[in-house]
Amino acid sequence: MAIIKTTDLDKLDFDSAINELKEYFDSLGARKGRVLTYNVLTYGCQLNESDSEKLSGMLASMGLTQSKGGELDDADVIVFNTCSIRENADRHLFGNLGVFKTLKKNDRDVVIAVGGCMMKVPENVEKVKKSYPYVDLVFDPQQLHKFPVLMRDAIRKNKQLVNITADDYIAEDSFFPIDRKRKFRALVPIMYGCNNFCTYCIVPYARGRERSRDFNEIVAELASLAADGYKEVMLLGQNVNSYKGEDGKTFADILRAASDFKEFSRVRFMSSHPKDLSNEVIDIMAERPNVEKHLHLAMQSGSDKVLKDMNRPYTIDRFLEIADYFRTKVEGGSLTTDIIVGFPGETDEDFEETLVAVNKAKFDAAFTFQYSARPGTKAASYPDQIPADVVTERFGRLTELTNRYAEESNARLAGKTMEVLIEGISKAGDMTFSGRTITNHLVNFTIPEELGIEIGPDYLEGRLCEVRIERARPYSVDGVLVSLKGE
Ligand code: 5AD
Ligand code: SF4
Image (cartoon, rainbow, N blue to C red; front, side):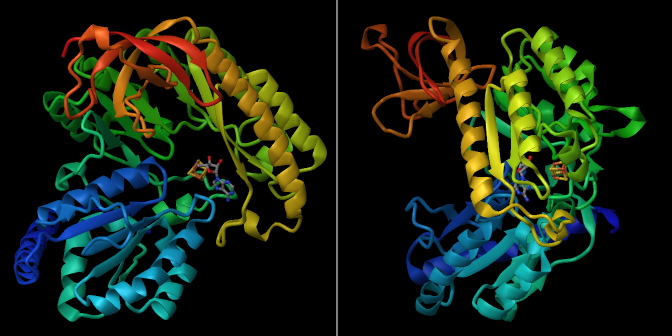
């Protein structure tokens, strides 16, 4: 798989395709007598979200506006940014694609594009070709910079265009217009792909080998985000701790550089692998006030045998040693994890070891997954797959335990007054606000009227405040705003 850097020529092609498409959509909109809209559907991880923000930015540069209807098919350009990690991702995609047949029949100008990790699995591409001929474009998640060119060509030719290749690109992020979902939060990929080949995981196939972005490019991007008023940056990669920049630059260097910008009140990062996380990174988390006090470290299993079969090169003792170091150094910090149950060959004893490890690590939150075989991965062909009823039973026991620790973690906050970065009004729509602490705990809170705080149309999104926590729930805490901090 060749790793290719995008060039100035790519940038020229990119810009000219966007301009052409803008002219096309402007005249189509004039003909239809309305503003044309787009909808980018995202089903995946933070990197998938980050790609969607770029796709949205490109579509906005083509003169389209984001569809507000909330319905999947309520747009003139619909882009599926698929994910192959999430459970049922394929049902999600193929179920929805079926719905678009009528839409496309009624309006031939509608454009439907499918990209993301699922399109790196040849079976899925074949299925789109065969069963969904009205999909206009299948594009490669590793070649986002080609999206406008491909879309222009698909529209010109009026015929399904499929462009999936074996090449890996490093496209510098300064290349793209970005339409950020949160006005205070910037997602900043620092590396792409993964070399770990955990035997259950499709990512190294879907996202290619590890490529680190230029250190100086990243710092330049951070500087411009700071100048633009962003309060939170999220440094992203499948495995951020194996970042390798020029002149031996490491992830610790990036974390320090990001937290040097005092404009950022939160510097977050995802994800870390136990084999690559250094104590130095944990020390930085402890020392620097604007680095989040939250570490997401996937454990996956508490059994050394299963970890070995998963190709996760650490022992559970080593994992717990890191967990201990984090707990000792980052006082009050939160430790979260991913755990898979029912990996092929997992015995009752192995599963019990996972429960023992959870009891030791006492995760503040855990994402728990039932193992599901992903075509193309090594574990999919392992002989001793676990029957579904056993997986379900183990999963139930595991989530009961992890939920208990999550609730305990929330309960420890009750009675404290904590700084919260406001995300906006909560989904319930009842003037309850929500936000996160620097430990990544979710806080829902009310604002007493007597404080006379002017709320404004953006519901204080991106502002910092102090909240007195009054009550813990399983996945969040409730509180009352005490004071709003200055701009
Ligand atoms: N089955 C179940 N869970 C999986 N994950 C990744 N691949 C699979 C799979 N095939 C989980 C891992 C990973 C998280 C993002 O998704 O726990 O850390
Ligand atoms: Fe997948 Fe393992 Fe890489 Fe994470 S570290 S993306 S689980 S292969």
